[in-house]
Length: 333
Ligand code: HPA
Ligand code: ZN
Image 1 (cartoon, rainbow, N blue to C red):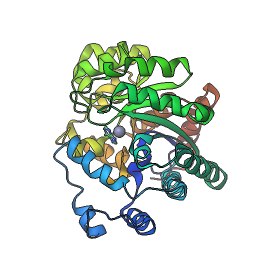
Image 2: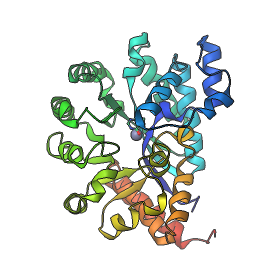
Image 3: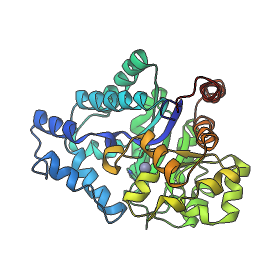
Image 4: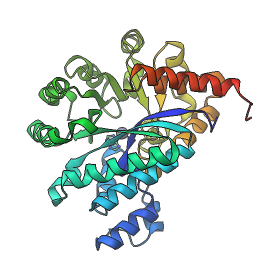
């Protein structure tokens, strides 16, 4: 199903940096990384949980400094995304990693925006940006970020929430989400990755987000599963990430069949591909194999990617139609 047209809804741009590129960025910016070699970095891709991953991931961000870095990073991801059959990518980006180092927001978003334009021209892939507030920081910092984003509002799709989940419930950002909604941003939040199902309820009830990033722990609660299905709330699930972060032990028990049966808009995504061992097709392959999913189940997940996206209705319909057309075309397997 590698060539199946897909949308990716949960991928962190700075989490797409390949080891070789990270070392190249560090060298050209004269930044010293904490790993002696690419091999040492890859050996460190072994985490006890979300916090351990985030520590390493934020160290890697130190290599990114200039507008050219953000351009190259984004173009490299979109190239790989296109190779994975992705035609629409809604990419997370958190300026809060870079603002304290004096890297101008205009350079961050300018580099990303330029790459989005070039990737569309080159490979016909549509890239969009969702700004992520970091949940371990204060809500007032998130509100300051929203003000800083004002001049760039036109080129941004939505806002989300990421970072260390436990102890930082979504309700901490109620005013942030309310202000973002008033400015027309689409809303999403990481919830139910390591945190309890109650955080997912809070994201829906208090922050009024339109979809849930991960949502894994909520899948054990039948009332929430029914609500996702009834209200068309998509879950952006990331199996290889969940495996590496020890959210799950074995993908053979991953709740995809149950969610599909319940009519939930469950989607597959890569989160931070090099850090978790695979891009989007590797995530499809891993669950397809572990759960013996049918071709139709995988196709439904791909349709859900478009239906659960923040694209205009016409683009959603075109994405779903492209999945159907692909299935009717010459078989690749
Ligand atoms: N969870 C929370 N924050 C993140 C993640 C994640 O999986 N990846 C990058 N930032
Ligand atoms: Zn994530």
